[in-house]
Image 1: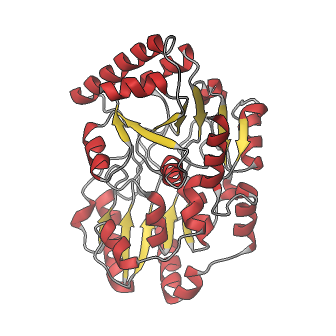
Image 2: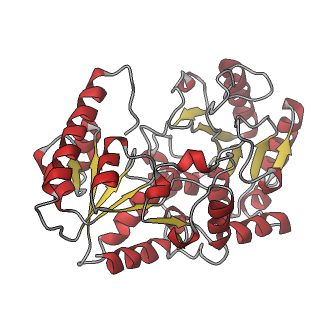
Image 3: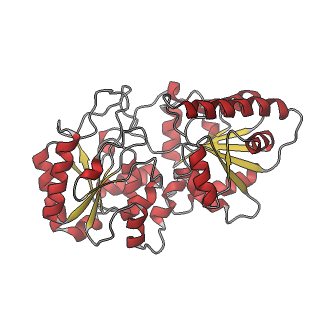
Length: 384
């Protein structure tokens, strides 16, 4: 859960988790662990969600998602997910007896168990980064037992740029990408309803920028345009060229008032956490420095990259050469590229070129094969 410092309920839930973490540290000295595995992150999505779904195929595995977010806990409970609310006695029992904890963000007060227990910690992270990181950004994860990454190339990046010890890194692929490689039969109309978009055969263009990051004054919209100005422009273009414009803001960004514009639909990450299924629905991606671009690569569809300054104080982990698709620097170029793609829809939906394949091969090597979740579960089985 993303903690809102202005929300008193969030402070209460964090306090209850902290109490359970402290008690678990004490009780683990007297209680034997079992084979339970805890999943911990803002939402049960991305790599965590993919690993959880794969684990349901294995009788010997019991993965439980732990969340501080009580309304989200209730929602998952209704969906028959194995979930525990972090402020409950069940959470104390889980933290006391589990053998492994897998996370994709930070730990909040569970860091106490990292410091004072033998609970095994594994990091799976939540995206291939453009953002510049260094050793200081992963102070908690450096103390984990294992870090699972997308490829040997990414393991090398983690070692040389992020300061991880090589023996902690395991290249197993990115579990969240499995559904992009092996999507199975797609019911497009059902997918559109899932994201509250009216079902139609119109082209879906997804706009998914990164958030302000380290630039507090940064706009989430390009070319010096305000939100209303940009979305009004997109609304008119969508009407003229017959497409649907979908806005996917980062979890840390405000929801804004995007739903007021014709042909424009908002799918904020906190309300619609499953990014990969949204990508399956999207025919064209527009991005800036968001890691979503590396997931979308696997679909071999057209992308447009806004050539705006990166909002990262530590530069880039993966430089500008890792951008793919049409790079546009102003509104006129953008209009021209969109019009061209809409005139050649078949080419846009099957966009394969040498540069794109080079990036894809380097980032994922041979591990984007639809089996990364299975490899993760194999690794869990070895541990327990």
